[in-house]
Image 1 (cartoon, rainbow, N blue to C red):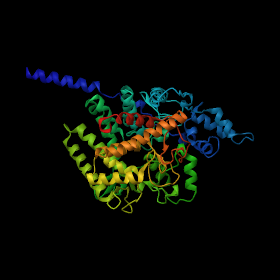
Image 2: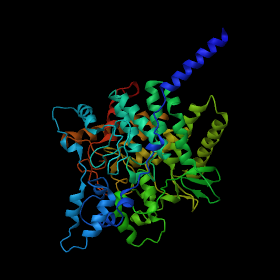
Image 3: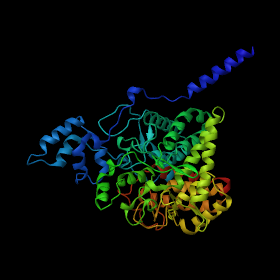
Image 4: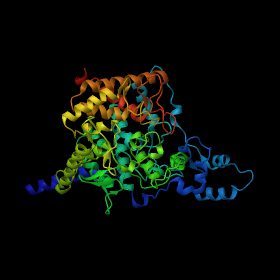
Length: 528
C-alpha cells in the first residue's frame, strides 16, 4: 500500500511540474537575429551619420518594405544618380515606427493613480511570434513597454514596472513578462537589454531573480520551481570565466574570487546611437576598446553617468570595463540567494558554491569598496586597485540585499540625508555633469532601491521623507502636464529633468510602478 502512495505522490508532483513549465522555443525558432548595421552595411552608416532622422533610434526601429538585400542592391544602383536623395530613398523603402502614447489623451478628471491604471493598456504590446522585417525580436506573450521612443520591453525597467502591475492586480501580465524573459534566456543564453536585435550583445542589471521573488510573494513558492532552470542559466551567463587573463566577459578574478563588471560582446558603435558614438570616438580617444566601454555603460542602465568616467566632464574618458560596480555585485549576491532557495533541496554542491560566492561578495565590498572615512560604498577599479571615489546611489544596493552591518547602514543613511536628499526625492549622484544619470536628476528605480534599503535597517523616517517628496513631485508634474516622466529634476522642482542622448520621455513604465508602490507603502502601519 505504501508503494502505491509513493507512486501517487510522484505522479502528482510530476503533474505540478508540468503545469508550471515554460513553453520553450524549438530549434527552428532560435533565429539568428542580425542588427540593422549588419543587414544594411554602408546604407546603414550613411543614414545614421546623416540628418535623415533626428533620433538615431528611429532608423533602427523602422520596418523594411522589401528584403534587406533588395533594398541594399537598389541603393547601390541609385546612389550615384544626380537626383538621388537619401531621405526620399529611406522614406520609400522604410516605414517609420509610431510613438503609441501620443494617442493617449489626458483626462483632467483622473487622479494620478487612475491615469496609470488607464495607461497600462496603452503601454501593452501583444504577443508577436512572427519575425517581421525590422529589429524587433518577437515574444510569445504580451508585455509592457516603458513609453515614448522605447517601443520594446526593457530588462531592468520591467521589475519596477511590475511593482505597479502588482498593485493594479495584473498578475497575468507579470507572469507573461516573466515567461518572455525565460524565453529570451533559452534563446540567447541571457536577457538582452531589450527585445531588439541590436541589443542582443549585452544585458542589463540582472533583476530577473527579484521579479521571481516579487511574483512568488503573491503566488507562492511554486514560482521558484518554474523559473529556477532559466535563472541558473542566466547566472552562468554573468559568471562565465575562461582563460588565464584577469578579466573575461562579465567576470573578473580578484583576491576574493570572481566579481562582476558590465560588458558587451561587441566593440563598435551602438546601432541605436551610432552617430553619437562615432563622433565621440572621433574626438580623439585612443582606447581601442572605446566602443565596448560605451556599450558596457549602456548595459549598466546608467547611460551615462560620472560613475563610468575618468574625467567627469568628458564622455570619451569612459572606462566602464575597469570598474567592479557596487550595485551589480549586490544584484548577483541577490541572485545567488534566490538560487540557493531554488536548489536547496536537491543540489548541495551548487548551493555550497553559491554560499561561498555570497560570502566572497560581502568580503569584497567590505574590504575594497567600503570607504570608512566617507561612510559609503564606492565602485572599485580593478586595474588601479582603488575605489573610484565617485559617490552615487549605487551605495544603497548592499542595504537592499542586507549585506551590511547596522553601523554601515547608519553611515550611508547619514550621507543620503545630508548629500542626496533633495526637495523631490534623492538625486542619483552629487556631480553636475550634464549627463542624465547625474545631478540634478532622480530616477524611480533608485528611489525604490534607496527606500527599501533604508527600511531594511530601520531608517523609516528618512524612507518616508523620500517617498513623500517623490510622490508629491510625480503628482505635481502630472497635474501640470498630464504625464508621468522617465526621470525628474529633484533639485529644482520648477525645471524638467535634462541630459542624455534624447528628449525627456513620458509614459512611463517604471515611474508608474514605483509611484503606485509608494502610495501603498505610505498607507502601511510603519508610516502612519
